[in-house]
Structure formats: structure tokens, C-alpha cells
Amino acid sequence: MHAEIAGAGFAGLAAAIALRRRGWSVRVHEKEAVLQAFGAGIFIWENGQRVLQAIGAYQDVARGAHQAPGYETRRNGVCVSFEEINGANPFLLMTLTRQHLYSAILAATAREGIEIVTRSEAVAARREGVLELAGGRSLKADLVIAADGVRSAVRDSLGIVGSRRKYQDGIVRVLVDRGSLVSGSWDRVIDFWVFGPRTLRILYAPCEGDRLYMAMMSPRDDKEASRLPIDPAVWCGVFPMLAPVIETIGSRGRYDVYETTRLDSWSVGRVAIVGDAAHAMPPTLAQGACLAMMNALSLAEFASKGSDIVASLQRWEVQERPLTDHTQARSAELARTRALGSGMQWDDAGLRAALHVPIGTRPEEFRRPRRAHALLR
Ligand SMILES: Cc1cc2nc3c(=O)[nH]c(=O)nc-3n(C[C@H](O)[C@H](O)[C@H](O)COP(=O)(O)OP(=O)(O)OC[C@H]3O[C@@H](n4cnc5c(N)ncnc54)[C@H](O)[C@@H]3O)c2cc1C
Image 1 (spheres, rainbow, N blue to C red):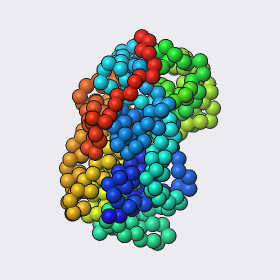
Image 2: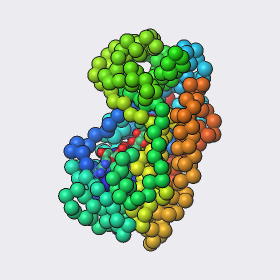
Image 3: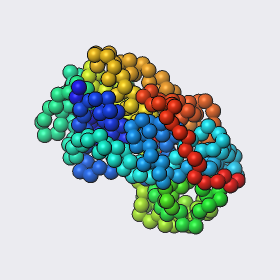
Image 4: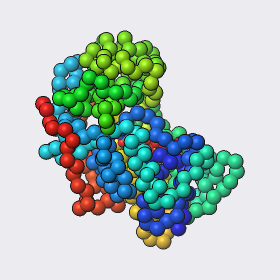
């Protein structure tokens, strides 16, 4: 069985490894010339960590990724929520740079001998199992996977987009050095919110080494705060405790708005759509990449069972879609209401995906990592 995959992001590579490990030949097409991760840092909850283990990337990812001792939310300078994580409570969360995560997955891809073709742009797919590339080549496969991200050209060629929606807020993402913000409460993930006279947020997340990821949220219509490069005076004025790192940002960063994609169907014939191409969501629950990899793994599991690929893809969607739909809807609701300003959602609705044991993983093999830092309240 052979699969052609469009997109060498988290979803595409996870699908490629999972299929290869089930005996498929696979080829991945990446439109960029260089294989690298975009964005800055990323949160990977337990469900994502389990998938990383199932595709052979977990050890490399865990080596160095930050395991914060706690997750705190501060609203107008006052702590409104604190939860111990990576310890006694059942919440496993790693924070790391995207490049660290991507490099580990790429190394797993190399170990499987998977071919990744760069500068290979997919433009369309046909239901009988054909991937069309820019330049006119058509590649036949038993399974075609569209993992080409939120602006997926392959998905759009199939005419199955139900809805796309943008939200009122966006995020400037930056990576800087932690500088003097080390140890004690600075080892935690801290979600700083300020409401009034303007709404701003900085999600502070230590990563591997002394790297620090900051997601700086502002409304799209706040031209001053959403501007790039960021204006240190605007942000330091609101978050003076973070001034030592804000002042080092300089010209770094990119601004992305929150976005949701919903499809009428996750497959058309022998073509499956996975990851942000199928279900982009606001990053409020930090589940986009976790679910992208989870659904890619189970796609491989379903496609490898039974002789009828088309029916297997339909069964895959029936199995996986409810949890993804729930998480997407909850993420959208949190984006709309900015309810995270009152604290992380430590409840079933907020953490259902994080605590889910993904199909294709072996629960008995997943070892809870030892926490890297002592909890200092
Ligand atoms: C601000 C922000 C913060 C986030 N934080 C988190 C978080 O903390 N945790 C989390 O789990 N998720 C998070 N997410 C979501 C996460 O980034 C995405 O869900 C994830 O990257 C989706 O992976 P993907 O492989 O589907 O798509 P992508 O990562 O977009 O990868 C798609 C790949 O396909 C390539 N490509 C595109 N078009 C073509 C084409 N036509 N032909 C060939 N190749 C193509 C691209 O170059 C890229 O390599 C966040 C998102 C945002 C916007």
C-alpha cells in the first residue's frame, strides 16, 4: 500500500511515520525549500506526548523540553488560578520550542527511511487517489493525505469546506532568552491577563534550556498592540514584571489571528484531510497540534485495517470527530469569551482531549516523566 502526503508539518510527518510503521510506503511533499517549524514555542499535553511516543519521537522531545511545576493565571496582577502540573495531579504538559519538537519528529521520520520531497507543492487531489503537484505531475496512491495546514490547497480542491471563521484576537509569538527570569515561580507557565482600559495577555512559557516562549495576545483592532515589531513601551507599561524580556524582543515575532476551519467531511474517496487542514482551532486549549498528530496516528491505524480504504476513512472520522469537534467548539468559546482570563479550564470540557488515550498508542508503555523542577509555591 502506498500513500502520498501533502505537507511536512506535525500532522503530515506523524501520519507518514505511523503508516510506515504499519508497512506502507510513503512519500511526503513539502512546498517549502527547507524543513523547519514556524511559530515560536508550543504546549504539548499528555495526549500529544503519547502520540510522540507511538511514533518514536518522545525520547528526543522529552530530553530538554520544560516540564513546569505549575500553571498559574494572573488577572490584573492577582493570582486567580494555580494548579500543580507534571507532578501529583494528572496533568502532563511540556513546553518547548517548535523547532525542538519538529527536529525530534523529523529525526524519527529519517529513522523510518521516509522520503520527504521539498519544493514540492501540492495543488489538488482526486477522490480515486491522485495527488496533483504544481508543474502538472499526478501521483497515484492507495491513500492521499492532505496535511497542508489551515490554508490547504488540497482540501480546497475538494470543495468540502463547511465554514471558516476568524476571531477578535490574535497572538504575536516570540522566543527570547529568559535572562534573569529563572527559578522559583518563573519556572511555571504563567498566563498574565489585563482587562481595561485595554485587553492584553502574555502567556509566559519557559522552554528547553533558557529559552522562553511568549504568546502576546491582543485584539485585532488594537493596532498599537498587534503591530510588528512590537512596541516595548506598550507591553512593558502593562506588564512591567516582564520588562526585562520584553525589551529584548526587538524585531522578532509574528502575528496570527485565531481561526477555525470546519469541514463537511474529513475524507473524499481515498483522500483524507488531517490536522489544521481539517480542524484548525483557536490555540486557547493548546490542542491544535496535539489533535493533528493524534488524528494522523489513528488515520494510519484505521487505513491499515480492512481492505476498503474508503470505508476505513469514514470509520476513522466517526471515531475521532466527536472529541475533535468538542475541543474545537470549546476552544472557540474560550476565544470568544476570553474566559481563560479567569483561569485555565481544569475541568472535563477543557481537558477532555488532553486526558484522552489516543488510538494507536500503548497505555502500558507510557511512562509519566519525572518532573524536571521542584515545585516552589
Ligand atoms: C498562535 C498559535 C499558537 C498555537 N499553540 C499551540 C500549542 O501550544 N499546542 C498545540 O497543540 N497547538 C498549538 N497551535 C496549533 C498548531 O500550531 C497547529 O494545530 C499545527 O501546527 C497543525 O499542524 P499541521 O501539520 O496540520 O499544519 P502545519 O503545521 O501548518 O503544517 C502544514 C505543512 O504543510 C506545508 N504546506 C502548506 N501548503 C502546502 C502545499 N500546497 N503543498 C505542500 N506542502 C504544503 C507547510 O509548509 C507546512 O510545512 C497553535 C496555533 C497558533 C496559531
